[in-house]
Image 1 (cartoon, one colour):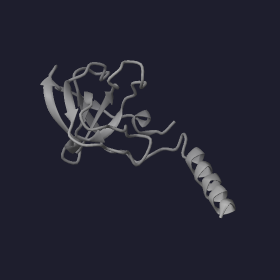
Image 2 (image 1 turned 30 degrees about the horizontal axis):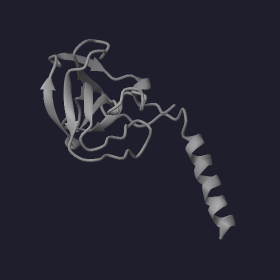
Image 3 (image 1 turned 180 degrees about the horizontal axis):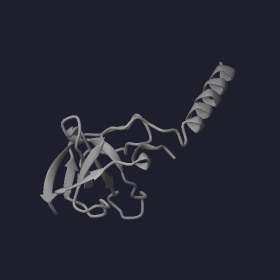
Image 4 (image 1 turned 180 degrees about the vertical axis):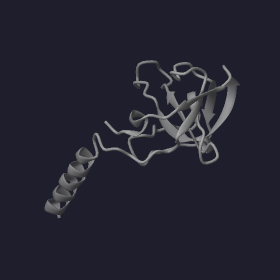
Length: 128
């Protein structure tokens, strides 16, 4: 039994490392941001539920966390947003920008208008 578990763990680790640097399918061709670099948050949202991502392009979100939204992905009905979360104690969790479904958060504070359309680039959807 232990050998099966070790073998399964080894296969999982091998598959996880093979995914690094892999080009992922695009979620959208364009995004809406506050500026051409998507460097300013456009809104703050609060997580309505936990979200556990399926791949490295997405960020995990816990219910109640604040999410700083930097971009709204434009294609496919605005299903995904890009942003970052910070733990309740600054420094417990490294802030990282990633994608998440817009349905798991509710907008709480608009900050800047998202009126700049930006074409998504290759790095927007590559796992490192």
